[in-house]
Figure 1 (cartoon, helix red, strand yellow):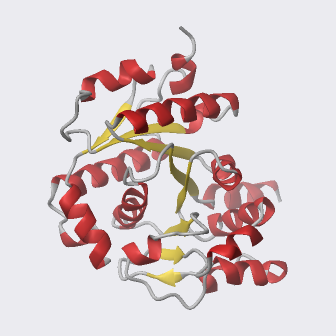
Figure 2: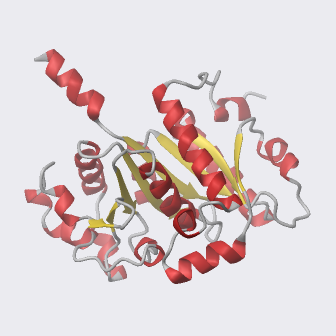
Amino acid sequence: MAEVEQDIKKKEGQVITVCSGKGGVGKTVLSVNLAIALSKKNVDVALIDGEFQFGDVGLAMDLQPSFTMKDIVDEQDRLDEYNITNYLTRHESGVKVLTAPDRPEYAELVTGDLIRQTVQLLKRNFDYIVIDAGYGMKDKTVDFMEEADKVLTVTTLEVASLKNTKMMLETIHQLQFDQKLELILNRYNMDSLIKTEEVPGMLRVEDVRHIPNNFKLTSQSMNLGVPVVVSHAKSDVAKGIFKLAQALIDEQSGTQEKKKGSLLGKMFSK
């Protein structure tokens, strides 16, 4: 019996929560493209739009879902690991998507318990569950962080983004999510008074992952509903996201050297 339980545990998927301290930093673009990049590594991937009021994942992937998170709310008492996938919409990449409700008022119906139930059931069906969580430290974002194996916190070189990110990192530290954290500097080569190499010192971090800037291309991809890793797979942005996907897979597989100490532990130890 113990061996069976161990096998089931091994098969559970990894949960990657993508969040940010400020809106408009490319969080949704990264979430969508990361999910597709992971799926190209021959793994099963689910994507949750955790922006339950005004989520844009469906728009970014040009989806017309038959079911949304509202249906999960309505059927929560009957959900199990076998029927949960019926509420997901398949993207042409193979990624299965749980889209946000089509009305913002339905967001209030999504409870923390339902979030945990949904994520746990999806973990039994997929290798990776990518969550486009909200920006800031809202209750539902924290719920997604609690369920995560990795919390990718996205920032840019903008002063407001860095300021909010630092406060978010402090809160993550207080919640003891340090070991889950990965800091993503999006648009790292954008024109800015702040230089990329100054960010680690400003935020007191050592490890930062970089995604190149191509605002025109990523904006176009959102408007057309065609992710950049599909339409422009050889672009610098796509290559950066593919590199991130591979790094996450390598970390899970244990092929990368385990980091010594936690990111936030280093931040606040001085």
